[in-house]
Image (tube, rainbow, N blue to C red; front, side):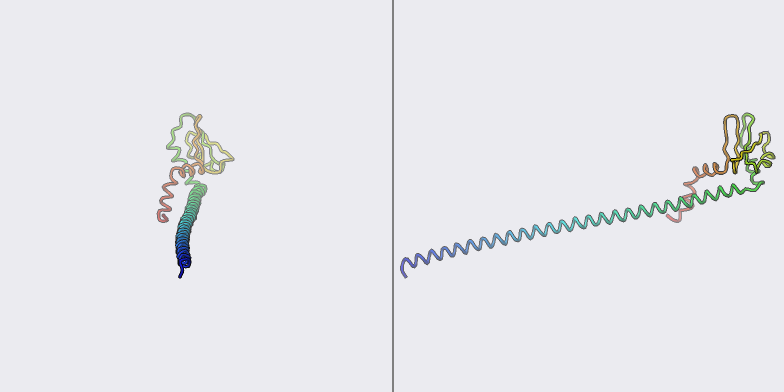
Length: 187
């Protein structure tokens, strides 16, 4: 082999080695870049999955919380309805008092009140004769608009004993205790 061929062969070998080195470096860089992009895509997908799981959990919690609130509101509404019925029944029972029970209630109430001046007992027209029997010194008048119960007027004070008023006042004072007693087994 001649020197020229040998030199050409060495140049070709060096060029091939250089090309192989460049190709190997390019291959290594492409694999590294590909691996980095795969890792980046994996990280993004994991973050997206975590975010989706988190959002799904929050959505589930909101739905569950909303359902619990709705159930609680429905329970409260049902309890309120029951309390309304209980106090309605109390009003109804008072409105259906017979004359002797009405007279007893009226007499007891009048015995517990101190009248300063000349008082007036106001009753429904249907109860006037009973009221006159137990009124003592009080003048008895009727009020066509009064359906049940009675009122006592003493100078500038009016004592309201209409059955609706009595039950409403009792409800304000006792509703919590009655609710506890009625619903203690439901809690």
